[in-house]
Structure formats: C-alpha cells, structure tokens
Image (tube, rainbow, N blue to C red; front, side, top):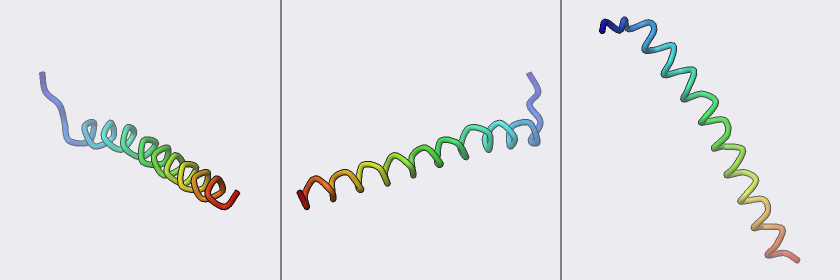
Length: 40
C-alpha cells in the first residue's frame, strides 16, 4: 500500500494539532483548579 508524503503529513497534522490544543487546555484547567483549591 503506497502512502504519499502529503497524505501522511495531512493526517499527522490533523491528529496532532487538536490533540496538542486539548492537552494545553487540560493542563491550564488542572493547574488553575489546583491553584484555586490551595488558596481556599
């Protein structure tokens, strides 16, 4: 099965960009909630 580089790159970006975005949001949420719970 032939896989051309453009298709592979498109799939890699399509998977990695939303995953990175969700990870950043999750880390921000967790760090924010832990800070607020410590201050209370």
